[in-house]
Image (cartoon, rainbow, N blue to C red; front, side, top):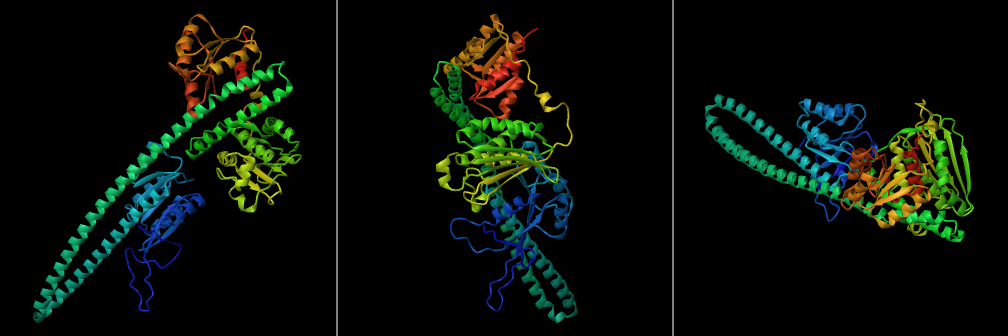
Amino acid sequence: MNISATNGSKTFAPGERPANGSNGKARELPVVKLLIVDDRPENLLALEATLSNGNPGGKSPAPEYKLEFVRASNGPEALRKILQEEFAAILLDVQMPGMDGYEMAELIRKRSQSQHTPIIFLTAVSTSDVNVFHGYSLGAVDYLTKPFDPWILRAKVGVFIELYRKQAEIQRLADELREQARLLRNSNEELGKSNKMLGGLYRELEAKSEELRQLNEDLEHRVRQRTNELETANQQLWQAKEAAELANSTKDQFLAVLSHELRTPLTPVLAIVQMINEDASVPNELKSWIDTIGRNVQLEARLIDDLLDLTRIANGKLELHLVPVDIHKLIHETVAICEEEIRAKKLNLVLRLSAERGMVRADPARLQQVLWNLLKNAVKFTGESGTITIATSNTDGGALRCQVTDTGIGIPPEHLKRVFNAFDQGDKAITRRFGGLGLGLAISKALAEQHHGSIWAESAGTEQGATFTIELPVLNEATGTKPEERRAKRSSTPQNNSRILLVEDNDDTSTAMQVLFERKGFTVIVAHSVQSALEIAKTYACDLVISDIGLPDGDGFDVIRKLNEIRPTRGIAISGFGMEEDVRRSLAAGFDAHLVKPIRFDELNDVVNRLIVPSA
């Protein structure tokens, strides 16, 4: 099926086929109109581009019509266009401000002129079965979730365009039949006035009736044939949709298992790095090499996290936990993380934190991830002894602006538009020279937008440095206590007799963690399975349990549930699975915290000290 798009041409009645002109010019093609409704201009443009694209491989057949796109950015505008024009199909976004897609579909079906117009819902958010069934209950012919396969979308729309054209053709033939009937009635009146012409007109009437009968039979046959074709195509589309959903689910499961398998071996490595760093007998030169190992293990974990974050964002499964956040404090914490790398390259770091209103409503971990990505990039692409400046200010509109400026390699003008694309680092030479997957900026852009903010890049060109700017809405009113008060630490000094039950089936991990905790003054008992942990708990009262989730004879959820049946127990879950659903399941089972492998011992120790409160 060939789809040809146009932005403006002569509009013919549905199904009309203008004849070739006497001057030999090709006939003008009839226009078929599609209404696309979305509050985001870039989505409207993407839909037009997708549907305007013909068959990419091979030579496309000559088009039989021109496809005209009619845009609408909200419900009321779309309804006005439906009253004014006739459409072959309506592509309708579900999530729109004001009137959403469901309300609009209900109003469309109440209007006689549009009650049979096919509606295809498009959404990247409302993807649950409840939303899908709700869409079909309002009369939608299909419900596609973003991102969708362009071939499938074109095939679906093409089917309804063909159905619209066939219906228009049938309507045209029916109109011709009615016109013929009218002419026949007039002829009959004339026949009554002239008996001499009665015989000839009667024979003509019989011939017309036979012609009409044959035409009607032909139309019925074509309608039945086309209906069968549409049913077959619809069945194929459903099968393709189910296959795509299965493939997507399999991909998510594969990424989660791959993440777990990649993370788990990194935990004992980080623990051993910690042990060596704390050992006073180890030479400083050796410790510097050990620090290199630790940094690279954490970088490996960061790359794994980036891949999972990209998957969460693409599937709309990334959750934010919003609280009041002091951007200046978060900047200082981020600088502290990168301080060693800044010092190693002898970079000059300048802080100009001038924003008078620096509180924002944000997920502190995710916002720090954005700041870390920008600062890490600046350090990475700035040569030795260069300068990095972090500045904050308030805009005239009241937003908070944070800018990270460097004197590094800069960004060529042709790469500025692609700098936030996933896996795109511009020139291949940059990837070979600096490494990385090219995911940090793509994730930062998605996170900034989820915080109702924006992010952009500026550069005068190669070797001219670059500036990355984030703008976020300012938190107007303080709610509750100050962030410093909310983050006040509990006692971090455990009692000398604090006891930890460590449930971990990986010998390397359990051995390293046992040594580290015993050096901190804890008593540690190790169990390698659910059963051994329960046997220990029956005779040995622990202040805290640290348990892996995946165990040979069950999982960590069984451990914490059954320990709480014996006596109330504080618990920390450790796992290579770190999706929001994994954290939710851990907390629901009874754990007080969920840490994702590879685990930094300092972070784990802080959580342990927070949960073990010395008794009076």
